[in-house]
Amino acid sequence: MTALSDHLVIAPILLPMLAGAAMVLAGDRWRGPVVALGLLSTLGLVALAAVLLGMADTPTVRIYRLGDWPAAFGIVLVLDRLSALMLALSAVLGFAAFVAALARWDRAGANFHPLFQFQLMGLNGAFLTGDLFNLFVFFEVMLAASYGLALHGSGTARVRAGLHYLVVNLVASLLFLVGVSVVYGISGTLGMAELAARMRDVAAEDRALLEAGLAVMGVAFLIKAASWPLGFWLPGTYAAASAPAAAILSILSKVGIYAVLRVWLLLFGPEAGASAGFGGPVLTAAGVLTMAFGAIAVLAAQNLPRLAGASVLVSSGTLLAAVGTGQAAVTGGALLYLASSVLALGALFLLVELLERGREIGADVLAVTREAFATREDEDEFQEPEAVGVAIPAMVAILGLGFAACAVLLAGLPPLSGFLAKFAMLAPLLGPPEATVAATAWVIMAAMILSGLAVLVAMLRTGIDVFWASPPAAVPRVSLLEIAPIGLLLALCVGLTVGAGPAMDYMLAAARALHAPGAYLGGVLGAGG
Image: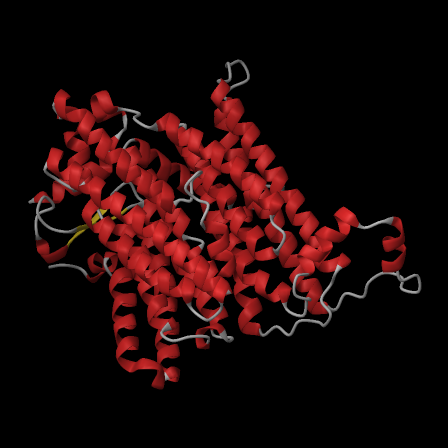
């Protein structure tokens, strides 16, 4: 007899799917029940994620076969430490963004609530699926909802950026489909575990074509991860989106990172024969170049939304470079960094809109122009000798503390989890004192340190401008629904810092399972009967 707990694996997909379908039927006429249903769904996902996180913290991989079909023929969902971690991050970020949206953003346009639920459904399905075709399907569900969220509301800038986002991701989806077709034509399967088991025995004349198909699919993953030179669309799109939409969209780049982690480590591990390690140097190079591009973008950003969007590029580049090293210990640190950066970026996107309230339009650009071109006479004109200091109301102080916490986390400064995660990545790269450090390790270390410095400089410059040089003309009116989600996300980052030991143990166990996927392969292939 099947236990109820065995069906919990599919619940993160079913819950938002059913909630979204009910919201579509209800329409905009029943806002109260729709909001209540959305709140129950997002809270339910948080509770489910917590339970699944505990269930996954074992060497055993949990398999769910839809329709009880064998793994070789049916759809298989797989729960391991990595997928449970991603489910938890999407659930917490989704809950925070949903609560913030209730302040006013959910009423800025039609169908926000069903779009939000389908977004969560696509995310959770992508993290749980065990085959490449359904990974493509859930990617499309996720992206279709994200198109609506990116365009939700009004404004020419939002529509323009949203259309760019749509076109780029449609191209990525086409590449994904082409890659999947080539892989199936050569291998005869799209199950990730079964494909990994067949990699060693692929005929020599077919291996190059199979690797080409996987490389095309990898390009689609890198587009979704906003890797250089394919991530040019991200800062503008996220800057133009509403605050809750930008917060939940910020995890989409990490879906691309997840796909790289899952597929690359599973298919090109030591057991892949002649294909072992295929594409590793490309991932490292892409990560370093993305960090460099992100560092330039944060320094060039002249407003808060673009600064937040450019920070996503730095985090994606850091993760790609770490994964490309092929070291389990570095991957463990990268997973901790992934969790910290997802929470910090979500908090920053929710914070940006609050900081901009009451400020003059173009205040950021005006401040930059003033710094660059002001003469001594201009400076004398701007001075107000009778004013000593700047009065900082309580709400501005709270927002400033939140902004400072985001800056420390994203720049990787001690003592918060961003620093601990970067240290956990860099320490294995340097190795023991007597070991010779590879040139690649030095390049990655330099890129991480310099990109972190760029984020710090940009955040300091922006913080000084926002809170000191050109403060809000009026104290922003902020509701509890808007400030509480930011506090929740930052509190979780503090929790990661305080509980860094157990958190790092979990991340290292997940990384070792990814680099030695015997339990994953055995669990899925053993479910074939």
